[in-house]
Length: 95
Image (cartoon, one colour):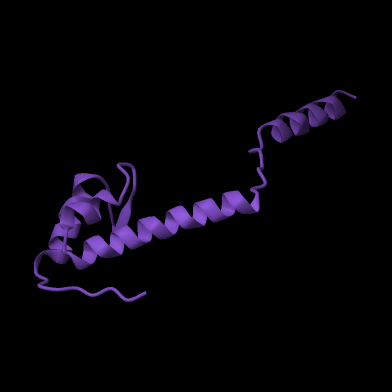
């Protein structure tokens, strides 16, 4: 009986620790998609202007960029973007 009680209690604790699922409405999904699209378009526009600061600002402070097996955050991302765009004279992004 003791094992059964512990098993049931363990299952109850595990079930309580599961993340809650939230169903989004179509309006919410559309709003998220619109926001993501706007961020993407702003990023591409900044890239075409070769605006290193604006491109780097598209990444959150805790965002991570991976390049050639190296993970970068914060100021390292700004340096990476500056290095990436530094030698370009022009850039065209086609979506």
